[in-house]
Length: 219
Image 1 (cartoon, rainbow, N blue to C red):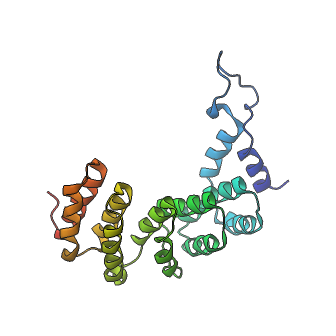
Image 2: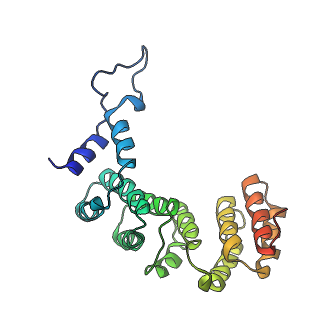
Image 3: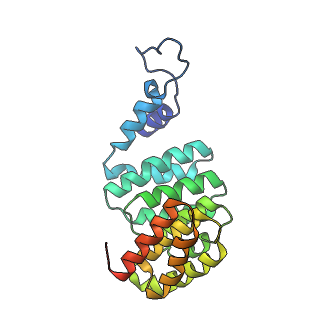
């Protein structure tokens, strides 16, 4: 058994680690399991030699939870090594993937990284129309990775989405965060409307921050 085979087998093992016992009256405690320690170990991986084998593993994998485990290892590892090609690889992978859970985890993990998207930018504009709200929100977040040459297009898309998501605070909050980078003074009236008409504090805060960023004021 090679190292990755062993690692992913342990990531799936929820048994107690040898020598440990559960506290009295407790039937399960995640931080005492084999998988817990394996997860910590996987987060410490830093050698880029594992990137290609992880890609090969993901390409062949059929089991949902195994795909998710691979993604949780691959993206942070690529991020540590500034291997931006993995961002395009993951988006290409998402195009073919049918399982909503896997797609959501992949997009969310990509959002959490500093990886830059080089070639697969257009597909983000399709994903923001996805029926699944979590995938849509993750795709919106990824628009922040695009450079200023996309700002005019992104602003137009976001203003249109505001009109279509008036009663959806999570969507509006995400849109405001994108406009904080890509918006212009043209966006401010609609963003102010969000701040005035929403009762959710996180949405109002996102709107206020976007106005500040666009207008160049921090106070």
